[in-house]
Length: 75
Image 1 (cartoon, rainbow, N blue to C red):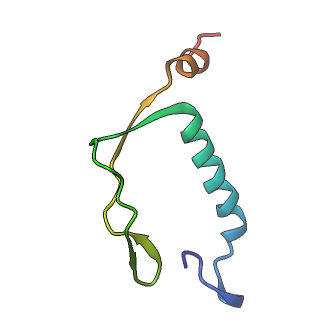
Image 2 (cartoon, rainbow, N blue to C red):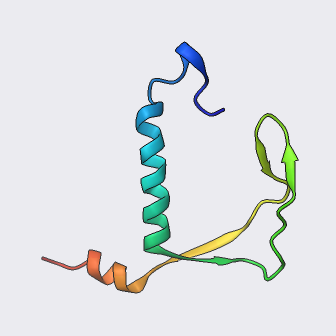
């Protein structure tokens, strides 16, 4: 539970949740994502306080050239 619960929960939770969504959306739009290895993705879960993957997914990103040219123009 990243922000705690109840009355004493994190006061920034209301701002952090939309910012995380916007960050993920812009990362998806501005970068091309590829897996590092060609192995199948292992979706096995490990159960602790929070649920996470047993084996981490390794990816590489590179900027999308059409967006890079659009955003880096001299005005």
